[in-house]
Image 1 (cartoon, rainbow, N blue to C red):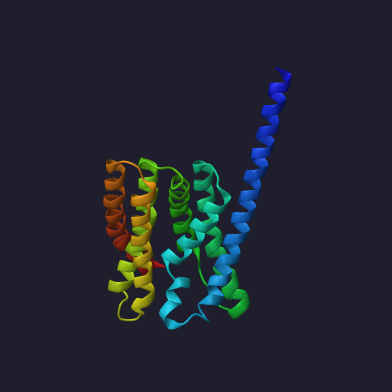
Image 2 (spheres, rainbow, N blue to C red):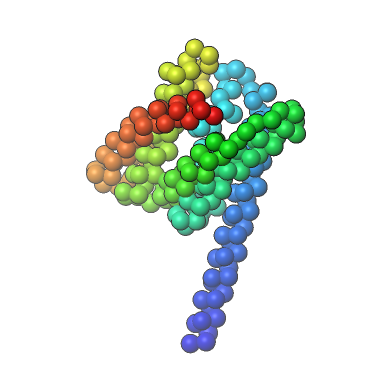
Length: 214
């Protein structure tokens, strides 16, 4: 009995240590990525400028970080919020330090904190194969395609279509890969496809509203 309790305690301590390490990695890397975004906006070519100035660009960073730490879905949801906040804070800090520019980040920081859990949960669910994988796929592919739709419609007159086309291509390619290689069951596949379309459509007015206020 004592040995069993001891093994459980050791496992819990090890798991806590791994989670703490993941939190440090996501926090630090997100802040650094946000800072690099501010710098990248000054060096990227016009065609790819919005890689450093779009929702899909930052979400790509968040997904890569959250996928790499391989945490439980609930922890991933929390870390998603942390990542969204730190990306914005890193960006704001870099603007001030590198260029002496002030920026009020409160609205985008709040948006990152609110959207982050959904991104974290969706990323963690990609490791599964049924309904959850379908929902995770719909969330991420839908944002990539919806962001492209926003770029090709709302700001088409002042931006290059190159990045937005790439974002749409990535979204469709990711959806295709998941429904043909990862997601099991016709209902789950249908949910992924219909859900992606739904997220993309809903994304447009939401993002447009936040962008007009921020």
